[in-house]
Image (tube, rainbow, N blue to C red; front, side, top):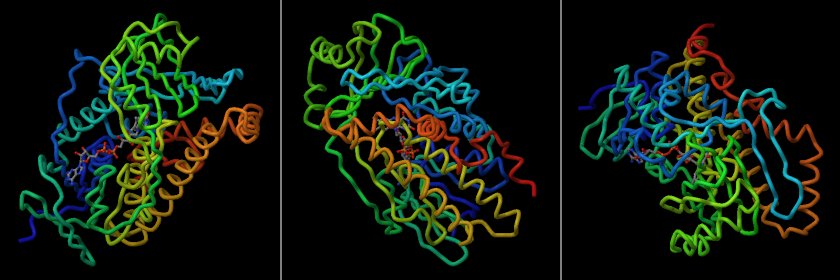
Length: 410
Ligand SMILES: Cc1cc2nc3c(=O)[nH]c(=O)nc-3n(C[C@H](O)[C@H](O)[C@H](O)COP(=O)(O)OP(=O)(O)OC[C@H]3O[C@@H](n4cnc5c(N)ncnc54)[C@H](O)[C@@H]3O)c2cc1C
């Protein structure tokens, strides 16, 4: 007994997996979506979630084609048009303003659980995807024409392609034996929602401090969501402080920007690392999102890369179908692997280099020369801005505003 058959079985319904499910099903591809934990309803009356993401304009265009962007904007999110980068050694800040780079906005701050919930709602409402939830992956038995997938519940299904969007500890990656290169940073990101004397005017602010960057991301009520990267032991110490002590330290670290802190919510920390899978496609199985790559959050690109993977895979499959390829044929998967792996590695290694540059001693020639070059070079600033906006030269068409139906025509 092989169970029901699908074109694509997606494992993991986080922000990336749900977006992929919508894009593929809207493109006429039959989809099973397997998720271990049913997403929790989003309550707009609740306080802001601790996990937020800076969603690039390219990612917003992808989520729009997946049908969820309007739902998100109708709830709550905060666009930002300016990014201010300070290096913490008294040099004038580097400003990125959207209009200078011909962008309407640099990004939008969205709570992770809101994005996931809205995408999940679209998938459920359109009724084009079979949901296996709560359930999780037990094993994959690869075959030449299709793969057999066994779930922990004992249910089985077959699919021409299995897509692993099951996060950094991906079971799909593990059962397929795909290896990763791993760099531990011995750093944690401390996250928290804070309010300052002055309301955040819609600026993503980042200061590079010894030990790691501190970022304030604007929320729709004028407060900010912070990500404070610290050496792991320091992050644990900050987590254990009472609110008054914590606010005093954060005030010092962010001094001069928007006045003093007035409020601070619960705190949490996340370990930071870089992980790069050695391949994103093998034996009718592909990886995307954090299952394929984990990058340092200093430029807020993790989920943006994952959403670009979802768009890229959709494009590869729809384009392949137009030229007569079957779903999951080796040629399509090779193209996806080359394209998305090179994009993610470029971004991940760029973040790694930036992190090393800013981690260098404040007076080191490398750091001073590096910053001076970026400050003076319009070309480098434009390249950073376009890539951060998800609109670099190899961006998926869906990120640059193409409609999903346009990919289904020759
Ligand atoms: C401090 C911090 C700040 C960040 N800020 C940003 C930012 O500003 N912008 C940005 O782009 N990125 C940011 N990121 C990165 C971003 O959060 C991740 O890249 C993103 O959450 C990954 O999404 P995903 O859907 O790939 O994986 P996940 O969110 O991990 O989702 C995986 C899903 O798979 C399910 N699952 C797992 N195993 C199984 C299984 N065996 N069977 C079935 N289901 C399974 C899980 O339940 C989950 O729903 C940040 C990260 C950190 C740590």
